[in-house]
Amino acid sequence: MELNLDLPQDLNFIRSIDSQGIRINNDYYHGSLVVSASHLVTGWAVQCLGDTNAENLQVIFDLQPELVLIGCGKTQAFLAPATQMLFLERHIGVEVMVTDAACRTFNLLAGDGRDVVAALIWAY
Image (cartoon, rainbow, N blue to C red):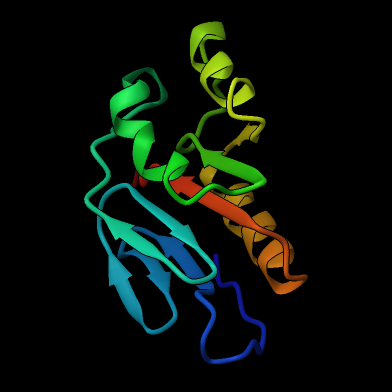
């Protein structure tokens, strides 16, 4: 799936996601990652939604976003209630969707200037 839109050069923008990886700006990344408009953290230690815990979510919490989009791979899944509470306790909104949809939604919200983070599980 190709995602293209002209944005200012200083913002991270997800160009595509496919079997080659997740393409942010002009670079491909293989594996799970965390991205905001201004930050990129590769090598996020989450291979499936069930792997999420307070320790590996801390990289997201450190960015202090208003909203987190979790791309859970190719199949819809849901956060465990205890994991949802980690976000609620910090007053951070969280939405879980398939990774393709999380990429598209991230681009729209980041392009509108929203303080959004996408935590993407690459499952190709």
